[in-house]
Each structure stands twice: as structure tokens, then as C-alpha cells.
Length: 120
Image (tube, rainbow, N blue to C red; front, side, top):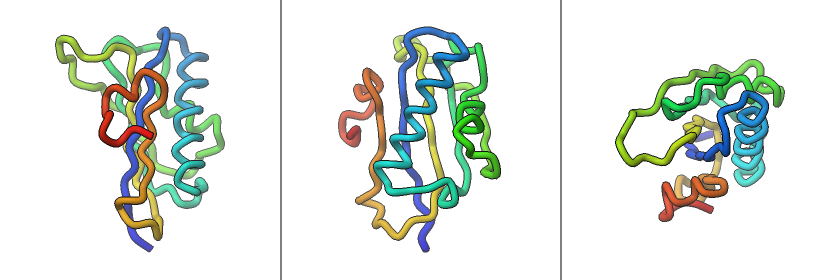
């Protein structure tokens, strides 16, 4: 079994804990579904949030989805002038037999503009 990394992002409409749970949950669900993964395939997940998001930890959404025994960590994204606001990014390390080129990176909604080269 190979270790792979899968990326993703979502832009929130507002900085509210419930909205963050909903949107980050949708992002994680899409990452799992599009890569035919289960929580058992997850090794760890890094979350970053832009500095304008402070209502909750993005990792809380993973716990609410039942991802409870996977190491999670949250960090703040760089505060770059002109960067897209209210964005949560994900870097998940997974076990998968898929070749690296077949990994589906998931950028939901307006966050697709962040990586037009790999957004699905």
C-alpha cells in the first residue's frame, strides 16, 4: 500500500462555526468519495484556515463526521495581500493503491479558482 497525499479547499461564505462544519464536512466527504476512501485509509490531515476565520477549528468538522482516531492539526494560512478570503485548505495523507496521477484533488465552489490545473 502506498502513502499518497490529497489536497482540497473550500471558501466559506461567512465565519460561523456551523457553516464551517457544513462546508469542511462537505469537502472531506467529497475527498473520501472521489478517491474511494474510508476513514481507515486516512493517515493524518492538515487543515489551514485564512486569518479571517476564527469561529472554530476546521478539524472539529472531521470529528463530527466520525473521523475520531486520525491525527488532525490546524494551522493558519499565510496572510498574503489579495489572497482569497475565508478559505479552509486540506492536505490529507492516505494509504491507497491508486497511482499518484489518479488521486482526485477536490476544490469546491469558488475555491476551484485556487488550483484550476487540478480542481475536479
